[in-house]
Image (cartoon, rainbow, N blue to C red; front, side, top):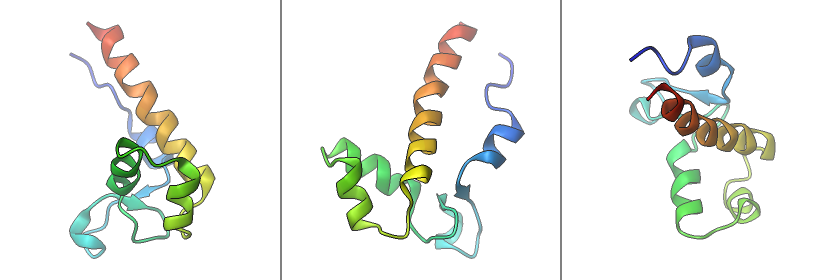
Length: 81
């Protein structure tokens, strides 16, 4: 199987992985908010607006970029099969 996610796609995401920030957990760039917090909140039924209220250092643009990327990735994997 060929590479699904290219380096430029990863670097364009509003995500930082730094061992000095939460032990290298992926966080929204410029914050200490883990990307998993967004996914967990959405899975729990919270809206994007509620997530943004709970994590005001994260912008709506960052959230939408992550959601768009997350939704596109499975579709790309399925095309490879």
